[in-house]
Length: 119
Image 1 (cartoon, helix red, strand yellow):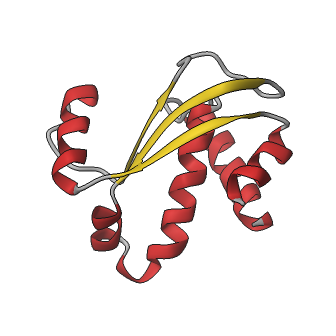
Image 2: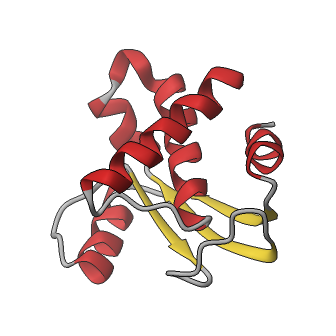
Image 3: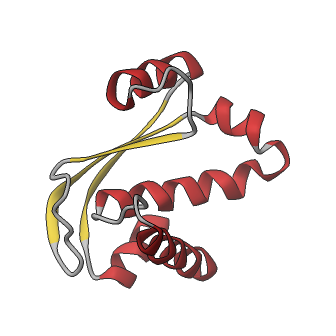
């Protein structure tokens, strides 16, 4: 449902793999790929990193790893809405959105809010 809304709003489509993992596995991935020896809530791995595809279509967009136990510990009372938000956040990363610069943060957060309001 969320993915269909995102596809429609951004006129982009593709397959997404969602993987739910344990805290220890998330910590390992975060250390391996981001050089941060700690768990996190989400990691996204786009198939074609750095190639935004607004208005485009790809067979495979990439993989999203979410750690439900980390999310439950950190956002206890807001678990369900946070999980939904993280999925949207991950899909936007796969579509080429980023938050490395402040202008990009604003653009990505605005799109997240827009999508979540419509869902």
